[in-house]
Image (cartoon, rainbow over all chains, first blue to last red; front, side, top):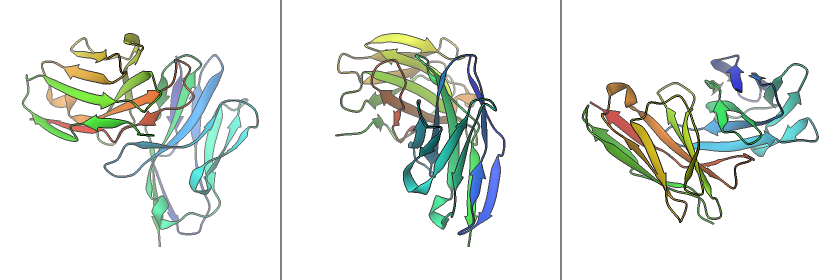
Length: 112
Length: 113
């Protein structure tokens, strides 16, 4: 079965600095990959997804992620963060036809 | 287009009681998945329903059960509540069994005392 490891539980960064949130997955078959964001007391909002094609995926709010099959990674990046990006970020993987499995989350804190 | 709606938003129950949580899927979606998110953790898959049939289950005991109705709305039932059942319960809907990405509701916060 598929699984996800988010390598950093917390990432503090100053406003306007770049950020990378790291995600590795494990699966023996083809997968779809996702990043979701969760603001306090809310559900999860889809940031971006990789289904097939170009390995560089662009999402909402200026985020992008790169699928690396050889390293089984799907790291999330943003060149310049804002205070409003402070939230919990979840990486998720889905084997085709199966349910979605989530990582434990990375708390991004953007400081002024 | 309406999104996924869950009710109630908050709930307090006593250990040993039973609870029913409800979810209305997004228009056009026929698959509903339920997740449990404990404080400070990622969502854990409970089960999925597709066209009123269970289509996969995570590592949760039988006291967690569900239903999906002909209009694709869904219920999550938990019997014999335990303190560890305290969590945010998330409902997500999608179209078909191939998961191209879920739409999540805002969740039900269940507290067991």
